Length: 130
Image (cartoon, rainbow, N blue to C red; front, side, top):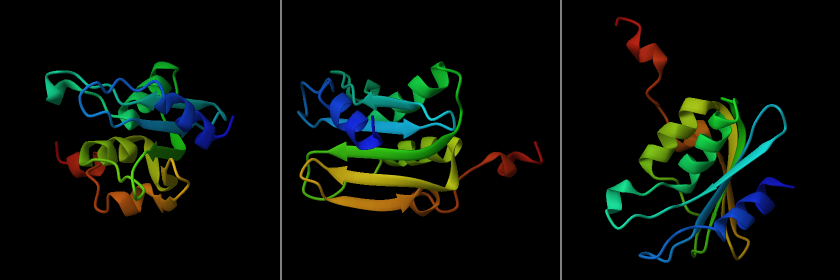
């Protein structure tokens, strides 16, 4: 299954009773396995989970810790950029040059990289004096 198909399929499982805004994400790990996640809302809004975070959690739960490529899809007019928290999560597990495709359900795409999404990302090097 391709990253796009995995993200499209898992998007349908999103739990979004409040916003009705379904998002799906899929991550490719070095093993060749694809991990997917969807957004999960909660009536206490800050307690929800983004699709990217869900896919990363599935990847880590399976014992993998590197993103080679990511794909995120939503039903919107333009490709959906990840929120700030998800950009940092992508930077935690993906190298700066890791490809990220942002897509709409209508087929529009924007290809970028983890580094372009979060220039100057906070990383372990910032804690060298600790």
